[in-house]
Amino acid sequence: KFVNSGGPYGTDITFSINDSNIASVDESGLITAKVSSDAIVTGESRGLDSVIGDIVTFSEGVVYVHVIKLTGVRISVPSTKLLAETEVAVVAHGIHLHGDENPFTFGSAVPGISFHWSVTNMDTLSLVSVYDKVGVSLSEEKDFAARLHTRNTGVGTIHLTAKCPLDICSPDGATFSDQVQ
Image: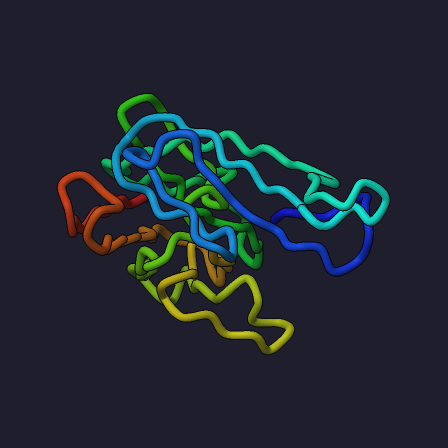
């Protein structure tokens, strides 16, 4: 997000990218990735300087963009051995050729990745949205985390299936899955 700090109110904000072969940026600052590589996005607040009578840059921000394609997903859970009546967060991490990605990296992708969480042995385990207690529900497209609740003693498995739209994952349109017991 570009925040204008300095200069008069109501100036024009423009965005540019140093290599349009890697990604593009529109007038609102939305970045569209094209190929895996690195790029630099610049946001500028420009306006008329009434003293000199010319268009000047009042403030400028730079963002370094690292474009990757996911090649898989991994469930991150703090422990695989839990006491009954315990609650922990489970989170989807993205895998790519050079390591893991925090879910906030790809969680805001447009179009988004659809996440489907499930468990075996529902007498032992249940999954709910991390926002369930406040009454907010997310579409599967943004639901990269859940709360795991252990009900009783026993063994169960958490399953995650992530369906990618075109151009976000490798191969295009891939479906990835992971499970933790």
